[in-house]
Length: 122
Length: 250
Image (cartoon, rainbow over all chains, first blue to last red; front, side, top):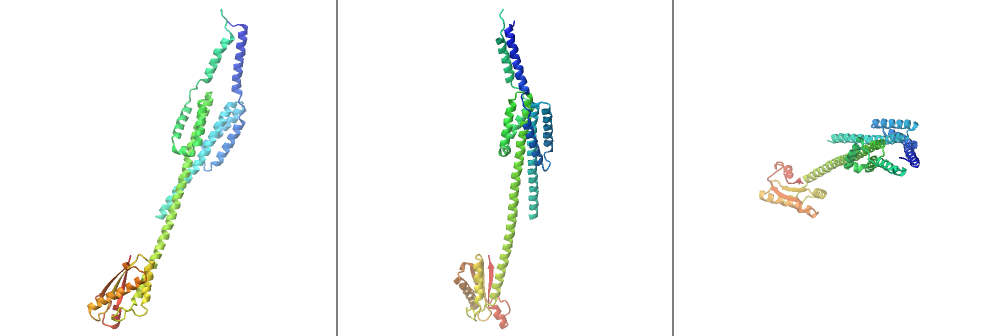
């Protein structure tokens, strides 16, 4: 059996718990910085992809960035933050793919050039 | 009846909240996959050599994913970790390709350099052989004019120039050896002619030795009248048969 005093205390504690939960859910600020960084990283990756080696990753990054913006506009900041960070990771991968593709292409060209030279010198 | 106080009710409530907050979430497949990929990447020498910082970043993200407070964060961090691992592997591939290209470039440069050197060597060798052949031809021509006073080992004036040429040649080509063979016409006895031809060949050897040429590089033989170059029937023929022949050897 509850006393009046204890019931009041219980209600206060419950209210505090609910408030904390609400704060946790809504306490994330709009990830404007992350989205701006994702945009810059994506642009940099696009510029690096001279030979079109990273189309898939660039598209994925762009889609995530767009979703992040949408979620942020809808006040879903936590989702927006996750998507922005994923977009950055995808853009970084796109950049790595772009650079590796160019390096592999150079290696292939050099191999062919060397073989041609060997043939000419025979 | 004993009444329940708010304090007594709050303690289990707090414990339940803490327990649920600290409870480890079930790892999603994406995180398990990422951990597996990390293990593979971390065992690659190429990744460790060329993309260690990127792999460290992925490792940190993996650790954050494992400690995530909710499934959404865990899944997202697992995705990011997986992508970062792929970045590390891709970067390593690119760097390895860079290194391979550099090595191939060096091979190409070495090949070009050795080809140029081979051509240069070949050209020099040809030039050297040409010079050598020309020198030998000149010496042979000069020796064709060498004459001795009849019945003696004394050279007629002017014959010395051929020997000087031979001495210069032997200084320039220090590995060359020569064989001098003396010949006479059929005047006089064959025995005397053989002796005379040997003495004439030896006299030229002695001149060369006096100019610093090692005697070990010179062999001499006297054939006397046994190997006439032309008929001894005429005076001109006999003169032609009184000769010193040279053979060059390496």
